Amino acid sequence: MTMIAGYSHFVQLAESLQWDEREIDFSADRAAWPQLTDAETTQLLGLIAGFCIAETSVAGELGAYQAAARDETMEATFRAQARDEARHARFFDLVTAEVVGVPGANPADRQHALRTHVSSELVDLFEHRLPDTARRLATDHEGLTGAVGLYHMVIEGVVLLAGQHAMLDALGSPSVELPGLRKGMELVLRDERWHIGFGSRVVQSAALGGPEADGLLEEGETAAKVWGDLISADAIESAVKQHKRRLKAAGIKFW
Ligand SMILES: [Fe+2]
Ligand SMILES: [Fe+2]
Image 1 (cartoon, helix red, strand yellow):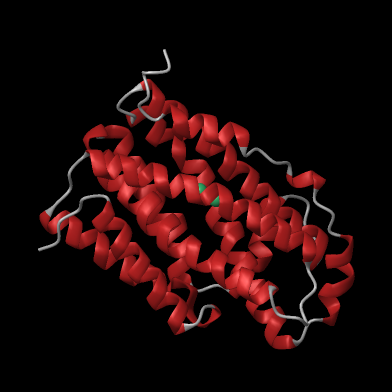
Image 2 (spheres, protein in one colour):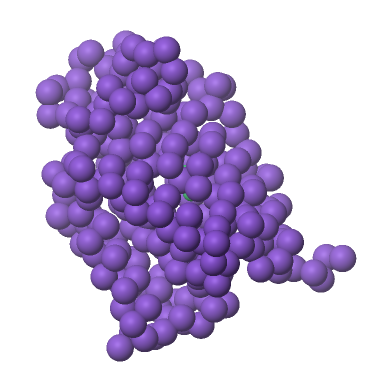
């Protein structure tokens, strides 16, 4: 049985990395939040808002991917990933409610209150582009590779990873003491690494090339900019470089 590998090692990995957002202690964060400078507050609020929108969106779109999976192990891996994304969405909502202190009866209310802190391009990517892609995938399973290209390579590999690194950089500043947020970010990043590794494997096995490959590279370059000023130009550049390296490693040939 162990020889039927497929994607099942990702499921085992996911199982071993489970964590519970409710176990994170935010008391020090709550006390420190009002002490942040205006610039620190602006950047952190923007990143948190972006993650709330992004994680809620990605958590909701994996059903179409599961339905289009090429075998059972791939299907189980998308399911394991969906569990992670739902936890990430709960974690960022908890930060919004407990640390930032955004009022609201439910996550959607709190998310709504934060929307003005991110660009319309970011909202568009998560609330239109990705759902549109998932909807097309639901009726055309052949589109799986391209859909994984957008979700795992562009959104997770470029947009979210760049945001997570920027957040960890901001949290590394000596004036910012937010240990609960930092702990959760590290755990989110650990999950995202295997999601990206899984997506790379799916894309690799499809031997993508030519215009589709160029399209993925260009999309990465455009998507990296959705954070606007919240992320430095250097960080965007390095995210794009890493994206290109990852595509090449997945055996993708550019024109
Ligand atoms: Fe996530
Ligand atoms: Fe993810």
